Length: 335
Image: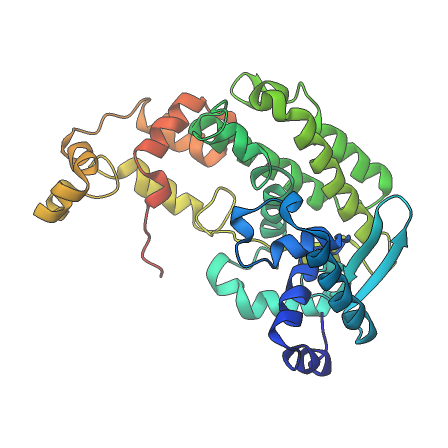
C-alpha cells in the first residue's frame, strides 16, 4: 500500500497520468503498454487492442517512463514480450500489504458488513478470482454457451468455496500444498454440480479457464513464499479483496436466510399484496409468480437441511427452483 506521501504525490499528478497509474495498479504481475493504451482510451469498451495505433502506444510509453522516474511504476524490458510495466506499492497488490494493514482495513471496512470471519471471506475472494469472475461466465450466461444452469452455477460456486476454505483452514503454505489445491481445482473429472464434471460444465472454455485458474493459484503461492507472509497474513489480506455478502453459504447470515426462505408463505420475492398497479404493468411476470401457490420441490425439512449442509451437495434442479423463488433476494432485519 502507498504511504501518505506517495498518495499525496499521486493526487498531485495530472489526470491523464493518474489514469495510467490506476490501470497499472490493476496488474501486480505486469501489463503491456498496448493494453494500457486500450484501457485509458475514452471509448475503451468499443475497441480492441488491435485498434490502438503505434502513436497512441508511444504516447502511453512516454508517460510510463515519466511515471517510472517518479516511482509509480517499474519497467521490465524483455526480448519476448517487450516492456512489462508493474505498479509500485499498489493498494491492489497484496504483496505490499502487512498483516496489520489487512486486519485494520478489514475491521474498518468489512467486519460490520460481512462479519468477523476473515477466513471464510478470504475463501470466497479466492473463489471469485479462480472460478466465478472468469471465463466461466461465458459458459454460463445466456449470451454465451448457456452450458451451466443457474442451479449448477450455485452448486459449483459453493464447491470451489469449500475447497478454498478447507485449504485455508489447513494453514499449509508449502509449494506442495498449493500444487495439490491447484490440481484438485482444475481436475477435469472433479464433480462440480450434480453429476456433471468441471470439464463437462465448461466445454470449450475448460482449457482457457484451467490455465487462468492455475496462474491465479500460482500467484497466491508466490505471495506466501516470504517468511512474513504465512497463511495468517494471506487470510488477513485476501479477505480485503472482492465483493462478498454475509448472506452467502458459510457466512454469518446464511442460516437465517435459509430459515426465512424455507418458511416464507408466498412465491417469489414478495407477497402479491405488496404489488401495486404500476408493478403489474412493469413486472407482470413477478406479479403472476406471487399469485401462484408456493409448492416446495422437496419436503421443507429436507430443503432446509440441504441448504444448511451445502448447496454443492444438492440437486441442481432443486437449487434452480430456489433461485427462481428468489432465495437471492431474501432481506433480513439486522439485529
